[in-house]
Image (tube, rainbow, N blue to C red; front, side, top):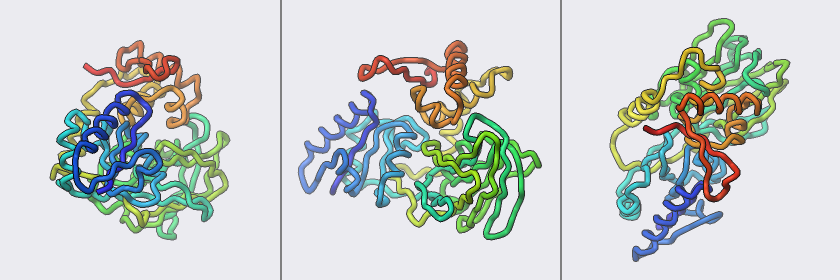
Length: 330
């Protein structure tokens, strides 16, 4: 068996990777440990880090390698506190593979990165108004305006789609969901068959228009047609337990039960807080990149949240000049 290992560039994640490598190398038999660029050439890939790091790695994988996510993110199977047990289960093959729908996105025929969660159409600068046309399987469904539109997988339905008013879709459902964000025409979310072909065209706004893939990649789309369909290559995750529905609702309860911000809290602060709750600890540069908010807006939102005592600001030994922001733990 070939076991690959990758970790986010933070001491706590690097430390867990080193422990896992040590445990693997102590085992005898036909076992190969793959690190760095060679990690993807494995039968199972262990990824240590938050969800946004995992999404980055998934987008770069050429082949659909089964991934074991280790961390405290929404997609994690293990928190890494009992690595000896986890490594033993992996080596003995005591796991099953869960396949998750991914989205194949293209812009005027040019293929973009695949999305595990969602692709969001929004303005390039801040949260502004845009207009667009939605077409499903060649039939125009609506011409609408608002803050944007989200096309999500069942996995992504508990992320930005949910915060925009969309439904929770269990992970094994064969469906896609389209969620209009603050629809000017009061359009409601659409649940589609997994085989549906979605087109978003005639997108325009004075603030510019972008397609944001899994919160990690922004592509200008003004005047272009974005096509979204189910990818032929699903993501594959290593699972130990048998629970499916309890997994998603249990984690949703953990997230929703954390903190309720005051009604008068700035919208940007609510957005940044929700981003941190789903993606895990991030620095200011990462928050700006994933939220699309201006630097000053993000800075003010972080200051407000720190003053409210709902997030903490800390530094790492690797880079004491760069602050990391995360939810305050009780």
